Length: 259
Image 1 (cartoon, one colour):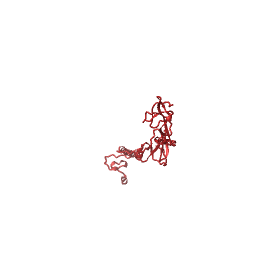
Image 2 (cartoon, rainbow, N blue to C red; image 1 turned 60 degrees about the vertical axis):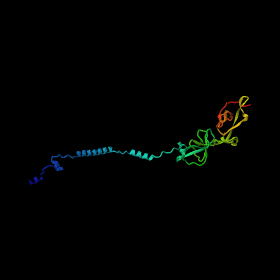
Image 3 (cartoon, one colour; image 1 turned 180 degrees about the vertical axis):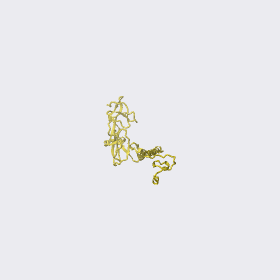
Image 4 (cartoon, one colour; image 1 turned 135 degrees about the vertical axis):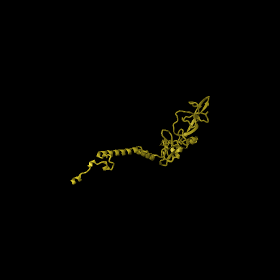
């Protein structure tokens, strides 16, 4: 009897109160901790942590965007001084700009030419042979001798010398000097208009030297009447068809030759 009484337990394990397992007050109900409740608690805790992290990132004062950083870095790398466009420079800008190259040439005789070295254009500085060549402006009858470089000025192509004198070279010559340069220059002559027997005629028996001009370039196929602006009352027939440089057309055309 004494052995059986010693084996009896006052309480079943399943009936332990919260006080027995947790040390809380006897009136407190213990929280179940089976598998389902534990999983729910873990999931809720994880979700709450994730939400808190997401909200913290979204509401941060500065948000990191890799594309913006890349764009800024690219911009910083490619930014710098604007490249020179030498082709658009005038003579002064071209000469004053390192890295640009100015071209100069002497004009052969053509209508409207100017004597002396003429600025022909500007390009990026390049290495060329030191020599002289003739270059023609594309689409025109302008030709220039360019010294000091074999490179073509912008808008020009290398061409053969036109076989005429340089601009204004012939125009400064008198009759004897013009005749001494037959390969480059040609004299222009005129038949003076005179009055005879009350009529005006062109005296082709008394041709006068009017001017000297460079060879080359066709003159109109008719005989103009020309005057030196300093002597407007003395017209001439110009049988070559050319109007001398600096002269003007004047008087009555179609005057018959004197008998």
